[in-house]
Image (cartoon, rainbow, N blue to C red):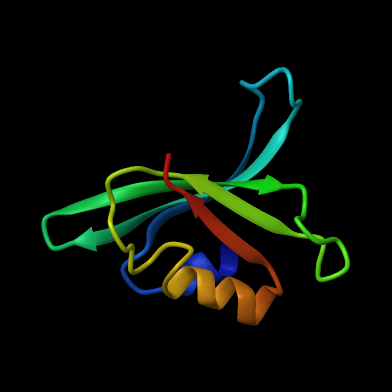
Length: 97
């Protein structure tokens, strides 16, 4: 998944990490990157590994919580999400609270 981010034009600052700030849930792996969602600004998205909604269809899902973006072109609903699904077999979602 990190390779996909590094190969996607206009996506920058891709990194893989582990978040230990939420002690109730333990360590949480994530993928983070900056995506240009409009001509005037970029957005840093952090997708956390989630328990699968349906383990039979696949064990890996990643979810980001974002607000105020509208329809993101590069995030889970767009270029990156499609590449993760096609090349890595991973589903990604965005939760808009």
